[in-house]
Amino acid sequence: MTFAFSTLGCPGAPLDHVLKLAKGNDISGLELRAADEEFTNTGLTFAQRRELRTRIEDAGLEILAISSYVKLCAVEDQPLEAHLELAADLGARGVRVFPGDPDPGSGTPDGPSAGEIRALDRVTSAPTETRILLETHDSHSAGAKMAALCRLLDTDVPGHHVKVVWDSAHTWSHGETPARAFDLLEPWIEFVQIKDTDSRQNYRPVAIGTGDFPIQDLLATLSGTGYPLSLEWELKWHPHLPPLEETLPATQAWITATAR
Image 1 (cartoon, rainbow, N blue to C red):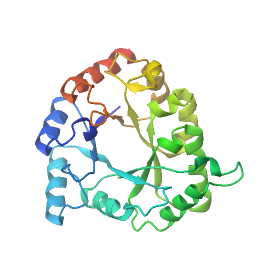
Image 2: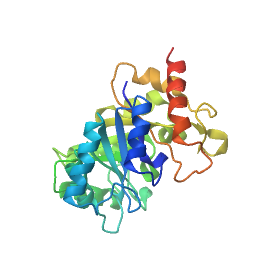
Image 3: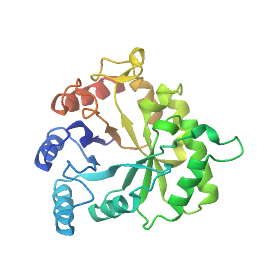
Image 4: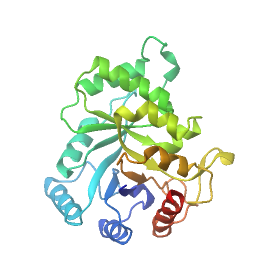
Protein backbone atom coordinates (compact mmCIF):
# COMPACT_ATOMS: atom_id res chain seq x y z
CA MET A 1 0.00 0.00 0.00
CA THR A 2 1.53 3.30 -1.10
CA PHE A 3 1.49 6.36 1.12
CA ALA A 4 0.94 10.05 0.32
CA PHE A 5 0.18 13.29 2.09
CA SER A 6 -1.57 16.57 1.40
CA THR A 7 0.28 19.88 1.54
CA LEU A 8 -2.69 21.11 3.59
CA GLY A 9 -0.55 19.76 6.42
CA CYS A 10 2.28 22.23 5.78
CA PRO A 11 0.50 25.42 4.67
CA GLY A 12 2.69 27.94 2.91
CA ALA A 13 5.75 25.67 2.96
CA PRO A 14 8.08 25.84 -0.07
CA LEU A 15 8.52 22.92 -2.45
CA ASP A 16 11.95 22.12 -1.00
CA HIS A 17 10.37 21.46 2.40
CA VAL A 18 7.65 19.25 0.91
CA LEU A 19 10.19 17.20 -1.03
CA LYS A 20 12.33 16.79 2.09
CA LEU A 21 9.30 15.53 4.06
CA ALA A 22 8.47 13.07 1.29
CA LYS A 23 12.02 11.76 0.98
CA GLY A 24 12.40 11.23 4.71
CA ASN A 25 9.13 9.38 5.20
CA ASP A 26 8.85 6.87 2.36
CA ILE A 27 6.21 8.92 0.58
CA SER A 28 5.26 8.14 -3.01
CA GLY A 29 2.50 10.65 -3.69
CA LEU A 30 1.28 14.17 -2.98
CA GLU A 31 -1.96 16.06 -2.89
CA LEU A 32 -1.03 19.63 -3.78
CA ARG A 33 -3.25 22.30 -2.24
CA ALA A 34 -4.00 24.92 -4.89
CA ALA A 35 -4.25 28.44 -3.46
CA ASP A 36 -2.71 31.83 -4.12
CA GLU A 37 -0.42 31.55 -1.07
CA GLU A 38 0.88 28.11 -2.07
CA PHE A 39 3.53 27.11 -4.61
CA THR A 40 0.73 25.38 -6.52
CA ASN A 41 -1.84 27.77 -7.97
CA THR A 42 -3.59 28.51 -11.24
CA GLY A 43 -1.55 31.68 -11.74
CA LEU A 44 1.68 29.78 -12.47
CA THR A 45 3.25 30.43 -15.85
CA PHE A 46 3.93 27.59 -18.25
CA ALA A 47 7.62 27.68 -17.34
CA GLN A 48 6.82 27.54 -13.63
CA ARG A 49 4.49 24.60 -14.19
CA ARG A 50 7.12 22.74 -16.17
CA GLU A 51 9.74 23.31 -13.45
CA LEU A 52 7.35 22.21 -10.69
CA ARG A 53 6.40 19.06 -12.56
CA THR A 54 10.01 18.20 -13.32
CA ARG A 55 11.15 18.59 -9.72
CA ILE A 56 8.33 16.45 -8.37
CA GLU A 57 8.85 13.74 -10.98
CA ASP A 58 12.63 13.79 -10.43
CA ALA A 59 11.93 13.16 -6.74
CA GLY A 60 10.06 9.99 -7.72
CA LEU A 61 6.69 11.35 -6.60
CA GLU A 62 3.25 11.20 -8.18
CA ILE A 63 0.72 14.00 -7.86
CA LEU A 64 -2.50 12.28 -6.81
CA ALA A 65 -4.54 15.46 -6.98
CA ILE A 66 -4.52 19.19 -7.35
CA SER A 67 -6.66 20.07 -4.34
CA SER A 68 -8.97 22.83 -5.46
CA TYR A 69 -11.88 24.45 -3.66
CA VAL A 70 -14.19 24.15 -6.62
CA LYS A 71 -17.74 23.20 -5.62
CA LEU A 72 -19.26 21.14 -8.36
CA CYS A 73 -22.88 21.71 -7.28
CA ALA A 74 -22.57 25.42 -6.44
CA VAL A 75 -24.82 28.08 -7.93
CA GLU A 76 -21.89 30.42 -8.61
CA ASP A 77 -19.51 29.96 -11.53
CA GLN A 78 -16.56 27.78 -10.54
CA PRO A 79 -12.92 27.87 -11.80
CA LEU A 80 -12.97 24.21 -12.79
CA GLU A 81 -11.38 24.67 -16.20
CA ALA A 82 -8.36 26.54 -14.84
CA HIS A 83 -7.70 23.81 -12.27
CA LEU A 84 -8.10 21.03 -14.84
CA GLU A 85 -5.54 22.77 -17.06
CA LEU A 86 -3.15 23.10 -14.10
CA ALA A 87 -3.53 19.40 -13.27
CA ALA A 88 -2.88 18.42 -16.88
CA ASP A 89 0.24 20.61 -17.04
CA LEU A 90 1.59 19.11 -13.80
CA GLY A 91 0.79 15.52 -14.76
CA ALA A 92 -1.59 15.05 -11.83
CA ARG A 93 -4.18 12.31 -11.75
CA GLY A 94 -6.91 14.89 -11.44
CA VAL A 95 -8.47 17.84 -9.62
CA ARG A 96 -10.00 17.36 -6.18
CA VAL A 97 -13.36 19.13 -5.97
CA PHE A 98 -16.08 19.35 -3.33
CA PRO A 99 -19.75 18.62 -4.01
CA GLY A 100 -20.88 21.78 -2.21
CA ASP A 101 -24.59 21.38 -2.87
CA PRO A 102 -26.29 24.39 -1.21
CA ASP A 103 -29.63 22.57 -0.97
CA PRO A 104 -28.91 18.83 -0.91
CA GLY A 105 -32.37 18.03 0.39
CA SER A 106 -34.10 19.51 -2.65
CA GLY A 107 -33.90 16.29 -4.66
CA THR A 108 -36.22 13.35 -4.44
CA PRO A 109 -35.53 9.62 -4.27
CA ASP A 110 -36.28 9.53 -7.99
CA GLY A 111 -34.44 12.63 -9.11
CA PRO A 112 -31.41 14.86 -8.50
CA SER A 113 -31.25 18.14 -6.63
CA ALA A 114 -30.77 21.39 -8.52
CA GLY A 115 -27.14 21.34 -7.42
CA GLU A 116 -26.61 17.84 -8.74
CA ILE A 117 -28.04 18.93 -12.10
CA ARG A 118 -25.46 21.74 -12.14
CA ALA A 119 -22.77 19.14 -11.39
CA LEU A 120 -23.94 17.05 -14.35
CA ASP A 121 -23.74 20.11 -16.61
CA ARG A 122 -20.24 20.99 -15.41
CA VAL A 123 -18.96 17.46 -15.92
CA THR A 124 -20.53 17.34 -19.38
CA SER A 125 -18.81 20.55 -20.45
CA ALA A 126 -15.44 19.88 -18.77
CA PRO A 127 -12.82 20.75 -21.41
CA THR A 128 -10.22 18.04 -20.81
CA GLU A 129 -9.93 14.35 -20.02
CA THR A 130 -8.22 15.12 -16.72
CA ARG A 131 -10.13 13.44 -13.92
CA ILE A 132 -12.52 15.30 -11.65
CA LEU A 133 -12.03 13.82 -8.20
CA LEU A 134 -15.09 14.28 -6.00
CA GLU A 135 -14.28 14.12 -2.30
CA THR A 136 -16.75 12.69 0.19
CA HIS A 137 -17.27 16.06 1.84
CA ASP A 138 -19.89 18.62 2.92
CA SER A 139 -23.26 17.85 1.26
CA HIS A 140 -22.09 14.42 0.06
CA SER A 141 -19.95 13.27 2.99
CA ALA A 142 -21.89 10.03 3.31
CA GLY A 143 -20.92 7.23 0.97
CA ALA A 144 -24.56 6.54 0.16
CA LYS A 145 -25.11 10.13 -0.97
CA MET A 146 -21.92 10.19 -3.06
CA ALA A 147 -22.66 6.82 -4.63
CA ALA A 148 -26.10 8.05 -5.71
CA LEU A 149 -24.49 11.05 -7.43
CA CYS A 150 -21.92 8.81 -9.13
CA ARG A 151 -24.62 6.48 -10.40
CA LEU A 152 -26.44 9.51 -11.78
CA LEU A 153 -23.25 10.57 -13.58
CA ASP A 154 -22.80 7.08 -15.00
CA THR A 155 -26.34 7.16 -16.39
CA ASP A 156 -26.55 10.74 -17.64
CA VAL A 157 -22.92 11.46 -18.64
CA PRO A 158 -21.56 8.20 -20.06
CA GLY A 159 -17.80 8.24 -20.51
CA HIS A 160 -17.32 10.91 -17.82
CA HIS A 161 -13.99 11.29 -16.03
CA VAL A 162 -15.24 11.59 -12.45
CA LYS A 163 -13.75 9.48 -9.67
CA VAL A 164 -14.04 9.65 -5.89
CA VAL A 165 -11.56 10.68 -3.23
CA TRP A 166 -12.79 8.67 -0.29
CA ASP A 167 -12.29 10.72 2.87
CA SER A 168 -12.78 7.77 5.18
CA ALA A 169 -13.23 9.90 8.30
CA HIS A 170 -16.14 11.76 6.72
CA THR A 171 -18.08 8.64 5.78
CA TRP A 172 -17.42 7.22 9.25
CA SER A 173 -18.70 10.43 10.85
CA HIS A 174 -21.96 9.85 8.96
CA GLY A 175 -22.49 6.44 10.51
CA GLU A 176 -20.96 4.24 7.80
CA THR A 177 -18.38 1.63 8.73
CA PRO A 178 -15.33 1.46 6.46
CA ALA A 179 -16.64 -1.79 4.98
CA ARG A 180 -20.04 -0.27 4.24
CA ALA A 181 -18.61 2.91 2.72
CA PHE A 182 -16.22 0.88 0.58
CA ASP A 183 -19.05 -1.31 -0.72
CA LEU A 184 -20.92 1.85 -1.72
CA LEU A 185 -18.01 3.71 -3.32
CA GLU A 186 -15.72 0.98 -4.70
CA PRO A 187 -16.61 1.40 -8.40
CA TRP A 188 -15.40 5.00 -8.39
CA ILE A 189 -12.59 5.24 -5.79
CA GLU A 190 -9.33 6.83 -6.94
CA PHE A 191 -7.52 6.98 -3.58
CA VAL A 192 -8.30 7.07 0.14
CA GLN A 193 -7.72 9.89 2.60
CA ILE A 194 -7.04 9.12 6.26
CA LYS A 195 -6.77 11.04 9.51
CA ASP A 196 -7.49 10.35 13.17
CA THR A 197 -10.55 11.99 14.73
CA ASP A 198 -12.39 12.03 18.01
CA SER A 199 -16.09 11.23 17.76
CA ARG A 200 -16.65 12.71 21.23
CA GLN A 201 -15.52 16.10 19.90
CA ASN A 202 -17.74 16.20 16.82
CA TYR A 203 -15.12 14.22 14.85
CA ARG A 204 -12.48 16.87 15.39
CA PRO A 205 -9.06 15.91 13.96
CA VAL A 206 -6.61 14.87 16.67
CA ALA A 207 -3.03 13.64 16.85
CA ILE A 208 -2.51 10.24 15.25
CA GLY A 209 -3.29 7.41 17.65
CA THR A 210 -5.21 9.58 20.13
CA GLY A 211 -8.64 9.42 18.48
CA ASP A 212 -11.02 6.59 17.78
CA PHE A 213 -11.03 6.36 14.00
CA PRO A 214 -11.24 2.61 13.17
CA ILE A 215 -7.99 2.39 11.21
CA GLN A 216 -7.78 -1.38 11.68
CA ASP A 217 -11.20 -1.83 10.08
CA LEU A 218 -10.22 0.44 7.21
CA LEU A 219 -6.98 -1.45 6.53
CA ALA A 220 -8.80 -4.78 6.65
CA THR A 221 -11.37 -3.44 4.19
CA LEU A 222 -8.66 -2.20 1.81
CA SER A 223 -6.47 -5.31 2.07
CA GLY A 224 -5.33 -6.37 -1.38
CA THR A 225 -6.89 -3.40 -3.20
CA GLY A 226 -3.80 -1.28 -3.83
CA TYR A 227 -5.42 2.14 -3.36
CA PRO A 228 -2.98 4.82 -2.20
CA LEU A 229 -3.51 6.08 1.35
CA SER A 230 -3.13 9.84 1.67
CA LEU A 231 -2.82 11.64 4.98
CA GLU A 232 -5.07 14.69 4.87
CA TRP A 233 -3.54 16.53 7.82
CA GLU A 234 -5.69 19.63 8.28
CA LEU A 235 -3.08 21.79 10.02
CA LYS A 236 -4.20 24.79 7.95
CA TRP A 237 -7.61 24.68 9.64
CA HIS A 238 -6.64 23.04 12.96
CA PRO A 239 -3.40 24.65 14.18
CA HIS A 240 -3.56 22.64 17.43
CA LEU A 241 -2.39 19.58 15.50
CA PRO A 242 1.28 18.52 15.57
CA PRO A 243 3.37 19.28 12.48
CA LEU A 244 3.89 16.86 9.64
CA GLU A 245 7.48 16.30 10.73
CA GLU A 246 6.03 14.45 13.74
CA THR A 247 2.82 13.20 12.18
CA LEU A 248 4.17 11.41 9.10
CA PRO A 249 6.36 8.94 11.05
CA ALA A 250 3.62 8.59 13.68
CA THR A 251 1.14 7.72 10.95
CA GLN A 252 3.46 5.13 9.47
CA ALA A 253 3.88 3.56 12.91
CA TRP A 254 0.09 3.69 13.53
CA ILE A 255 -0.61 1.87 10.29
CA THR A 256 2.18 -0.67 10.74
CA ALA A 257 1.18 -1.50 14.29
CA THR A 258 -2.48 -1.82 13.37
CA ALA A 259 -1.80 -3.98 10.31
CA ARG A 260 0.03 -6.65 12.31
